Length: 325
Image 1 (tube, rainbow, N blue to C red):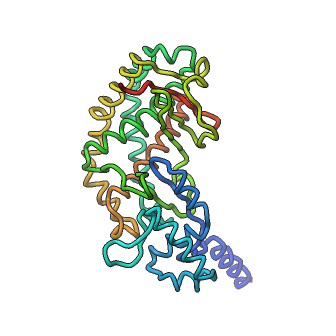
Image 2: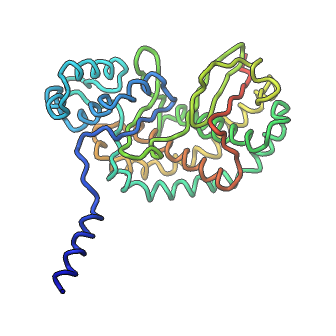
Image 3: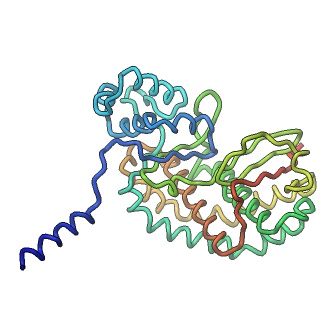
C-alpha cells in the first residue's frame, strides 16, 4: 500500500515539472518600435525566428540546416533577408549575430517582479498628474464630440507613452538614443520574446503625413487602408493649428519634465536588469531598454484601462494632428 501511494505522487510531480524546450524553436514573438511592417512580414516566418534564435546560440548556417532539417538554400535565402533588413548580421569580424535582444522565458521570470513594480510606480505617477492631462484634453476644440475615454486613450497611450516620451528618450540619449538604421531607410528597435505574446507588446502605433497632417493610428492592429484628413472629419479626432500646437507643447513638456526623470533616476537599476538577459552581453543597453519600456507601456495601458480612465479601441483608433509649418 505504501509503494502504491508513492508512485502516483512521483507521477504527479513529474507531470507538473515544465518540459524543457529546445534551445532553438519557433515559439518566439516579434516586436518592434516604431512598428515595422517589413520586419513583421519577415519575422512571421518560423524559419526566420528560428535562425535569429540560432544565431544567438552561436550556431553556424550549416548547423542550422542540419539541426532544423531544412535545406542549406532555405537557410541562406532567409538569412539574406534578415541581413538585408539588418535584423541579424556580422559586427566587425565576429560571427553572425542577432541585431536584437532575445528574451527567454527564464529571462522574463527574472524580470517580471521589477517590471511589475515599475508598472505600479509609473502608473501612479501618471495618475497623480491625470488632472493636468484631462485639463489639456478638455480644452481641445477638435476633440469635442469624441468620447472622453477615446481621446484620453489617444493622448496618453499614443501621444505620451508611445509618442512624446519616446522623443524625450531620444533627445536625452542616456537611456535610449534614436533607434538603429534598418534595411534601406527604416529606423526601429526590435526584439524576440519566448512564448509570451503579451511581453512582446500588443500595441501598434503608426504615423504618416498626409495633406499637412500627421495621421496617427493606435491600437492592437495596423490599418488596412491609408486614410486622409477628409476621411476622418466628423467622426474622429482632428486637431487643427491652435489645438495641434497646444497638444504638441503639452505632451513634449509633460513627457520631458514629469515622466523622463522617473527613468533617468533609475538608470543604474535598468542597466543591472539588462544584464540579466541571457543574451545581455551581445545586446546594447538601449536595445534592452526599448523592449523593457515597450512592455512597461503596454502594462501601464492595461492598468489605466482596468481603472476605466481610458477606453481602448476594438482594433485601432485613427486621429489627425496638423503638422508644424
